[in-house]
Every structure is written in structure tokens, then in C-alpha cells.
Length: 108
Image 1: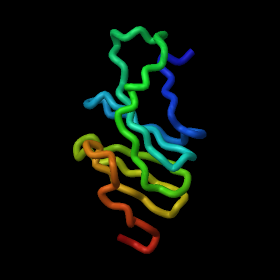
Image 2: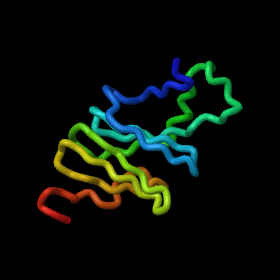
Image 3: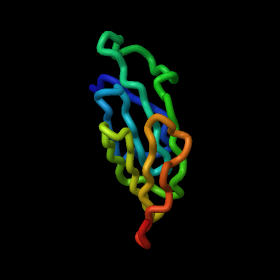
């Protein structure tokens, strides 16, 4: 039985990255988007109903399935790799658009 279930994606989730220092979770999947979640407090009743305020960000920029997300906690950068042929770098403090969105097989 899971302790917490997050709901927002419109399909399967393929990758999750967790920031222990900021108590955030980043999830990505077939809907080509990344959601940023607030990790629940350990004092919270884990069986309580879903709280929509736990979604604290939504990163949109890919046009196809996101297969992987990787977080570098020191820099605060999140990298996402997609079937659209791109790897995007995101500043986790400003989730509205990628820092760099043109990393392709053709180079930077």
C-alpha cells in the first residue's frame, strides 16, 4: 500500500526525481510534461485525502513522451530527455520554461 499517491498526469509516469533538500518530487511521462510536487511532512496523516496544493509546479516544453528526468541538487538543474529528440535543462526555482531547450542530436 503506497503512503502517498500523486495525481495530475494524463497517462503513465516514466521517471521520477527527488530533491531531499527541498522536499520536492519531479515526475514525467507520456503527457510530455513534468510536475513538481511538495513532499508531505512526516507528521501528515498519510491516509488523508489528496491535497491539490501539493502540485507546486508544472513544466511544459516537450512535444512527446518524456522518458527520463535527472536532478542535480547542487546546481538546482533538472534535465529531461524526450522522444521529441531533445534534452531540456530546467531551473527548478523557475519552472515556467526550460533554461535550454535546443539540445538535440545535432548538438548544442
